[in-house]
Amino acid sequence: MRLNEVTYTDAKPVDGYGPGFFRIGGVVFEGSVAVFPDGVIGWGGYDDLATLRDRADDVDVVFVGTGADVAHVPAAFRSSLEEADLGVEAMASPAACRTYNVLLSEGRRVALALIPV
Image 1 (cartoon, rainbow, N blue to C red):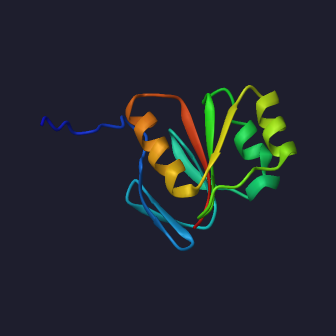
Image 2: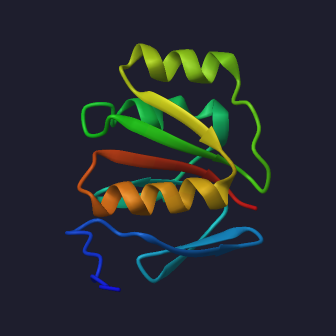
């Protein structure tokens, strides 16, 4: 078996998560966050469309971590992001973090919008 070290250029991967927090690039963030290739900011949940729409030119898809369990995102939330030419993929937050890290390591233009577990 051959092992290769994963590099993320300047972007920060999700290192861990737990009840109410995420550790991204070695820094702990409390509550819901939006993660972009160039940084992390607080996210106000499904009502905070501006945070994600304002970055539509920087990414192609947003992985929405819906908490501990997978859930549907509100239809208005999804349609608003899709109107801004953003793909939206909803999944449980742990799965969203893993998927983001893999695609980030491949150099893809991805973002995360995470609700804590």
